[in-house]
Image (cartoon, helix red, strand yellow):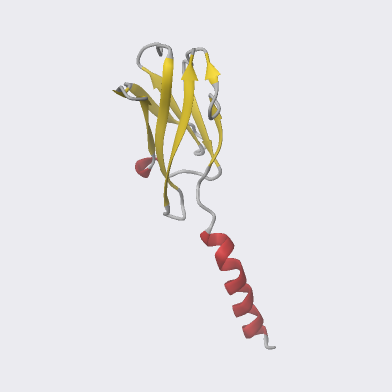
Length: 116
């Protein structure tokens, strides 16, 4: 096998791993499914640096619609913060998020938690 062929094989073998490298949620506060006191901020941490222009999140009260919240991105590029405009009342909440990282793949997801 020539060096050229070996290089081509290496590129083909590495391609699937690169294609699967999307920004995924790796941690959150509150955690998925948690029951907690009303958080002052909701933090979402992802596996890759996000493109803020193409990423975001929306806080919703289950069955009651959108909850006003300010969104910001941590300087590290992997963390989104949501700060509710007012303290969260007891009940079920969801954060719908969408992210785009350098690989340009758009990923969506939902984080659910309860406030006691």
